[in-house]
Length: 115
Image 1 (tube, rainbow, N blue to C red):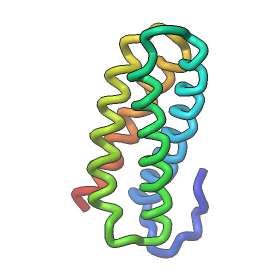
Image 2: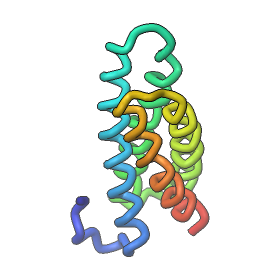
Image 3: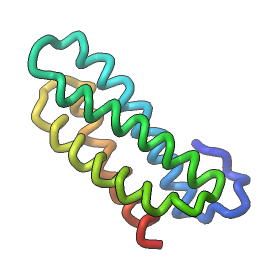
């Protein structure tokens, strides 16, 4: 769970920060595990790495109250949805974990983007 004392972060922002950090973690795990799965996992690895980077950056932008966090939130939501769709197509536990967690991150990022 993210730091709860961020003065400018309301409950929705705090939830989005938490979701982004969780998405970054699961995507790092998935990308690393997919590297050992053999052929056909390149797209999954790339998308997971992109989500991990963008989601952690979005969490940092929200924590510092950046004026650009809304734009980044839209990009993060798009990437989470695309990655979740890719991961759904693989039977590996790590891919299924991504497919389960990323839609929630996408939803909270879209809410932040429209706030």
